[in-house]
Image 1 (tube, rainbow, N blue to C red):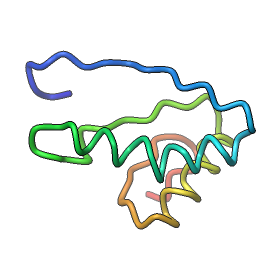
Image 2 (cartoon, rainbow, N blue to C red):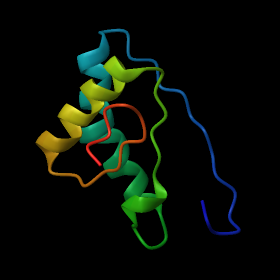
Image 3 (cartoon, rainbow, N blue to C red):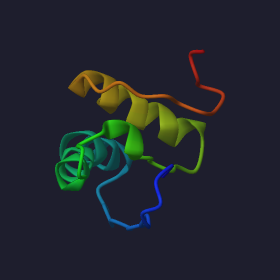
Length: 78
């Protein structure tokens, strides 16, 4: 965060596989986090992932949900 507020890292176990994890992130987790933020700014949310394959699954679900995002790996469209 660029603010002087503490951030947090939370681990969510999703045993049904990568697609389930990506769907959970896009449909549930990010919207819940944004609701808790003082200004509801999605740019204050970061999702860390292990590799390109995981990032691709998350990007697919995030795009499907209509979220704007920046991807900082080799899958980055910039």
